[in-house]
Image (cartoon, rainbow, N blue to C red; front, side):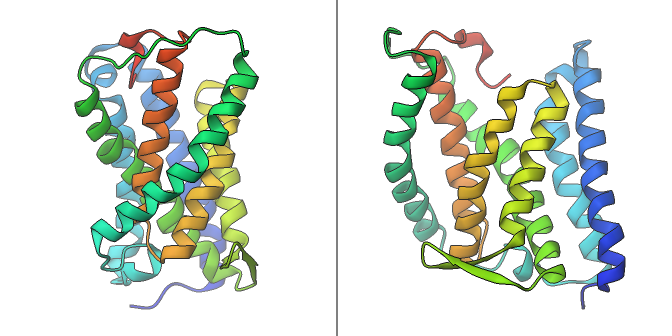
Amino acid sequence: GTPPSRRWLLIEVPLAYLASVAATIGFYLLASAGGFFGDYLHTLVGAVFVAIPMVLLLPRRESFDSYGLPPQPILREVLFALIVAAIIFPPFWLGFRFWWGWDRAFDFVLPVGVWNSALANLVVVALPEELFYRGYLMGRIDILSRKRVRILGTDVGWSLLLTAILFSVGHFVVTLEPERLAVFFPALAFGWMRCRRGSITAAVVFHALCNIYMDFLMLSYGLIQPQEYFQ
């Protein structure tokens, strides 16, 4: 099927984003009381990020190729994500040390169940968020704006910047913690990877690696306790 008109997209895209934010805030409020919503918070939020694109794209029988889901050789995408991580993580570590203080002691810490948490990060957090932001939103915004600029050898559009802004705002409004806005910067990398590879696959893997790496640093420098991992 063909995508809807530009006029319709100017209505659909903001409503889809607001619906995702409202649902996420709602689930976080319900989770604060514990119980079912506390136990399955990330699963429920992830389901929202998957459901919205499905509800909007499937009835029109639109091809998912335009939304970051073309067939891709998985191992090649994983390798690309690992290369990007190898380039970005060392300077990020230096910035992390500068921000939190050079004198902070390092004690290598991995939480119990780290591999289960890593898998959950990949499937429950990174995949749904990338499907919604770098898949659906970038795809829709690219229809609205065809202008492209070349960054690091890759043609990117306004969707790269706009989805990074929406991604960071979506994280901020849930907890109202200013540091949550910092996800704007990795979101730029996720979006660039989506444009570079024509798929969200590498971005999903890199997104999960970023979450795991950040948790590892926070744990190892004593900024959070092991039981807080993947909360």
